[in-house]
Length: 103
Image (cartoon, rainbow, N blue to C red; front, side, top):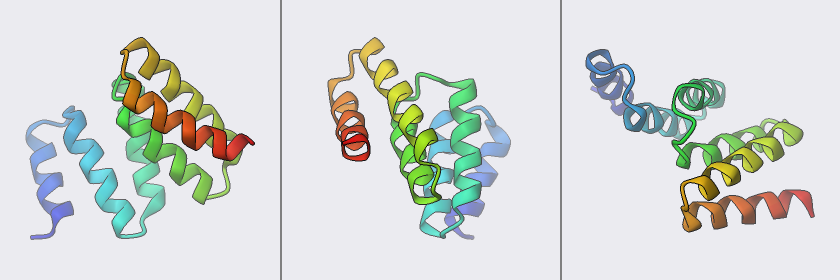
C-alpha cells in the first residue's frame, strides 16, 4: 500500500484531519501531481485557515504553475495568520519567500 493509499484510508475515518490532509498534499507533490496538491491545500485552508504551514506549500505550487499573483496573495494571507498566531518561524519563512517573489 502506497503512502497516498494509507493517507486516503486514514482520511476515511477522519476526513477533517488537517494534518492528514496536509500530508496527503505533500505526497502528491512528491508524485508531481501538483493540481491535486493545490486542491487539497485550498480545501484544507478554506476549512482550517489557521493551519499556517499549508500557506507556504500552496504558494510554492502556485509559483511553480505560473500563478504568481495568486502565490503573492497566499503568502500574504499566510503571513497574516502567522502574525495572528504569533508564529514567528512561519512568518519568517512566508515573508522570505514573499520577498523573493516581489523584489
